[in-house]
Length: 483
Image 1 (cartoon, rainbow, N blue to C red):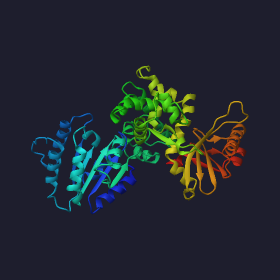
Image 2: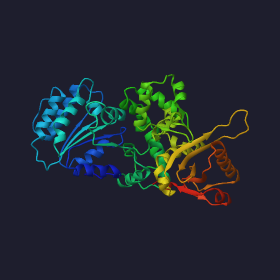
Image 3: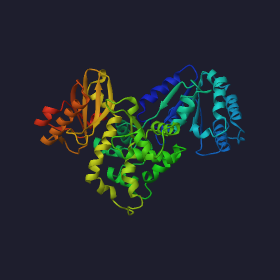
Image 4: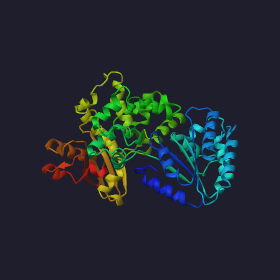
């Protein structure tokens, strides 16, 4: 078995499932390229009798059943050629008859990969799955049924939150997320033998996130800038053409989902539902809500609630690093860069990148909020995570302010976090110190909070101590802390 990197929580769940003395029905979901199939197959393939059937994107029912037949043949009768079953009832009857006499001390792993693709319209796969699970498989204590899918919203609607026959049948639901910074570091070192410092890993992460498939395309004999240039800006670079392909593979209504994502991406601090509907030219309703939920479940966008707002006032913003990088840097130059160009080597030194990287680092910090809270030693304080923004009112004598990250604590305190991407130690000078003081004052005046305010600086390269930092900054979180 090849080495599994990271995924410690998922492996603990799998360990429990494997040692369980009852049948288990597990679903694993998450966006494409995230490593779902790899994780399941690498962990379970040598743990007992292992059957794996994979769906075909846009395949017809007969194609899916042919896949089942081939998987069945390879698992049980590798030297024979078998006819494909006519429907899923016949398929599951074949499978049930084959496994029912297997000794009870042998684990039976039934893995249906990309179940949303297997379950074509009018195929009745879900009805048959429900029937055979309830009638037979759930009574076999050694059976571990695992279903997997990239269409996260489909998994949620039809399995996890199902109101029909499969309601409450799932014994464990696992949402597989991208690697964290720490897991990315381990992956680069153990799988690719790439030794990079924290800032170099962050630069890669802000381009492709912690998606294992993308990270696997890096070349250890090239620099970070060279790898980004080759993957994102060469004519045959994988991340040059991945974006639309990714959406087409995940969503039936991919064109509308693309429009939604592109509209949200134009608003750095998020966009309200009312604003978004106006930009897209749609009205509020179930179908539009479903599109937002799809994008949220797949990890492309996130719902945020600014400090002091009511639940209905939530905003949406992009949460996927590759999506943000593609829309800001790749989409506008596709077909315009000469072959063999060193485009990114130049752009990575530009003021535009310096400005944009600050925003990208904010997204990364929000994803690693648990590490920030741990570093600040406020785990026991119970934090509500949000941001805050005050826009100057026209004709009024007041100042605007923006807070990148705000931790509203239950110990009668608020940690106000200033996030800074800097290659060198960040230094606070007098004008910037005044800006920070103003920000704290505006926040206190506009919100009316009586809580104690702590100023936290989250920075890539640490803080250079001086008279201004000593007076203002209560805590410093470094990039290394996020690992």
